[in-house]
Image (tube, rainbow, N blue to C red):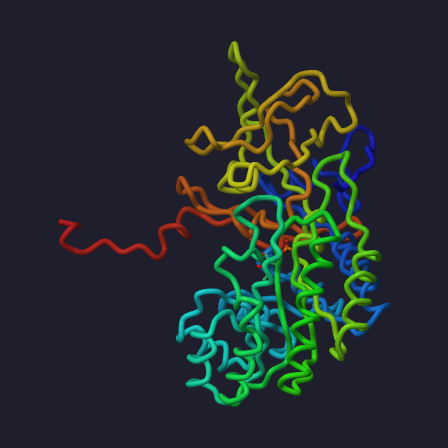
Length: 419
Ligand SMILES: Cc1ncc(COP(=O)(O)O)c(C=O)c1O
């Protein structure tokens, strides 16, 4: 969890007070600290690249804002993209095609054609995808997504590496898949697996590395195939609660790279962190608009709901909250922080001890940079909110607030209904 020091009862973000940011841009607003983003990238990049040649593929599904992508491009990142939309966004942000890896699931032939036309390498998820790709492009760089039968994650929905999940080609069939890929003329480059998301322990990453290394070795011995990279996927968790500890990425890097170096002749490790890079760089600022006390509960109604941040409702995720304009004051009363969506499942935080709240107070929801804006919606016809980037005391708007007009733009009413 990101820690902030109190300055005169105000919460500072990137050298500015949260209250000042909210006054200038309005709420709800996602506020990202550029320094924290660069620090996170550098920490994980250093941990791996001091061990062996490394490619950090930022998983842009976590947050695909162009400004954030530009910063990571400057830092030297590669990209994990899961759709043609993400590919196009990253190309627009200036990433060269060969620094992007398209890892899709249930990929249509139309999407394959578009990805091929952009020259982006493809991480193959199934025999069907591979065969359809070969009819579009006889020579194309590929890797194989292995289903390693090693799954982990903070919620059932995000466990991707287990045998029963829909992702990847079973580990026992990869040699067969690569032998067919060679016959089809595709260009084998690597092996990939992704176990899940929000993984706080090193052990599952070690297990998946061992699976990938043993397949790489088998490919060398049976097909004489020497791959360029092993990609162990993303999923590194972050501490969302005060008492949790961050992952020791130096240890993680040593455990992964030592196995690759000693187990096969692959020369580059790739990893695909999303959450680790962006989650704690960003707070969601939301205003208290309504206060309600019943016999059972005390509610702080705010202007962000699960349309803005769905993780608490969708995954039961915990996000720390504080009162940005009463920062550092001791908790006094227990509140549920709830949004404006017409469902009882619409909450950001439950049973939190906070200073006594008044209408107009500013709530900061921590660690909201990953799968925050990216998973937001227009549910209840509520326009999506702004994003702001702060750096050394100055703030830039990096996404304008949508309007109701934006929501209506693509709708059409047949003329017979207009009479
Ligand atoms: C293939 C792949 N790589 C990387 C990631 C990034 O995961 P995280 O943001 O937890 O690091 C995901 C997340 O779903 C994924 O599916």
